[in-house]
Length: 408
Image 1 (cartoon, rainbow, N blue to C red):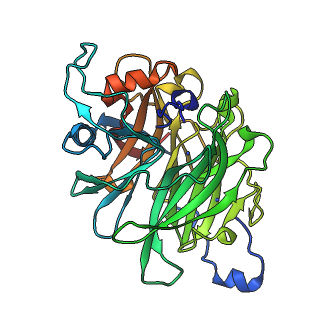
Image 2 (image 1 turned 120 degrees about the horizontal axis):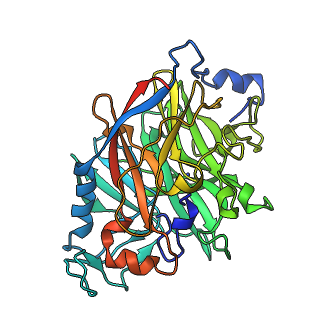
């Protein structure tokens, strides 16, 4: 969903980015209190002081993707999200994914890249399990079945939470984007709905999938909002961020939105509250918290919390949006958001490639360091599938490690 969208193609290079006043006093008493930072409450501007390539993590995905001992596991994908499980494992979630066999170089056209046969299977989503820093297995793929003809599911953010409020049993909730095949400019499908899947622990079996935010009746697909590009927990709430697809119709930037859900209730559509521009409301009419035509987000972005400050990472607007990561900061999930702050350009391979979908992985951070991934894809849709098969390293996540510090 590169800048994002142009780098996602229906060839399988598809990427491959929440909530209200209660209905009554009784329900109000059952809801958690707000824990949103304010100016003077430990909130200050944050910026990227330095960054470096995380060669260790990038190399681990290369090792696993190039492993030829199995033909039914992950060899490339995008939409990179992760969640740490209670037993210490990390579950990695991907959108469009190549399976199949990877062959050592040289490839059939004489280039010195590992390569994949053009008949390699492509699935709409996958999940890979990491233990102690080493990727060890791919769950049966696709993990989330298509919801209907010409529709598919892309997994995005996930978290471990109680099966229900107060329960000692924990499950994994995975946000899913439902998209529907359509003609250009919707080459990666029109936004259709946000769903929440429940996975059991520790076996990671899909128990249920429920729709929490249906956008299929919104006439203009570019105004439809999908939630789950990123989420974070604070004060008994899960804050879920989403975005629209304005860039698909050549608007310079997309807009960001936010919802909130009480802990343990992500799969309950009635528990979601949406920021409507002035308050939280159960009515499904969210208003943008960032996006004014000049400042805004790519179609996928990530938010983390540093003390009382919320920091948002996104691809930069305009022509730099295919190469450059920038950030915004706020004292509350609802904003106001300040920025953009200092940009940085992560490393890209040679050729017509784009970077997109910057995602933070706090569970992998070390000390004051934050791990951020970004996806890479080939820009020319007519040549994308061929290029990704000729050089399998193109359609895999890359990682950087950031140091965030107070200061503009």
